[in-house]
Image (tube, rainbow, N blue to C red; front, side):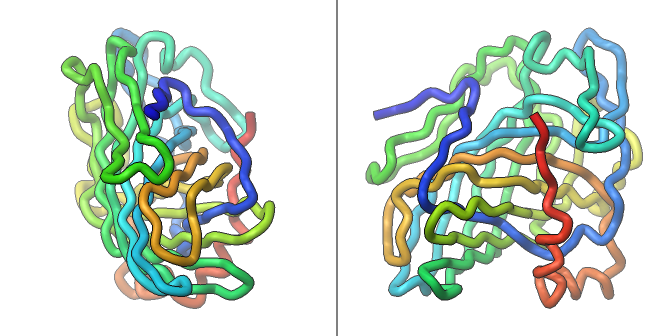
Length: 263
């Protein structure tokens, strides 16, 4: 059964998955958004909700996974996560969404938990001026399922990833909802996003919480589903010596900077 997701809802379940990596090591910078038919404004964060389907091949939590997903952006925030920018036109004059694919390895973390480490992550961001694009996820456990978009003929690509920096996920049994963090090199295109972006040297940090995880286990499965929400920020990519620390011993510090996305 297909479920259309023009607006992604917040769900709950008994298992949560997080993508927790190292720190961005640089403060998010303010950037300029130039919406179609509107006035430019400043933003520091963009809120989003998403859905993803995961295939896993594993024994007792050790193995590999692939993932595909998509989600809509809902609001801009500036200068911090407590302040929503008004009169941006998003979801009124246009929609903004992204699609992605990724994959990597999984390993057990004890107490029934899993750690998933990304080694690939490719993302594209699109502007939908007619607000008619839909996101559809196939049912949990469906063979050869996918997350697809429709009504995209008028859509304009406004950004894309240009290489994975770090990405990690944890799955915990029980009601412990975690956070996620995937960091990529990000390149804007077309002028919708502008400001202190430097091609190949800007870090896009996708950070937030997974609110529902269905069809997952420590073994092999097809089309397990994740629903979640979070925010996107941008910063300068650290020096190579600092990058060596990302995803290593500093990963635990990610819990200290967990971002709370306010309603």
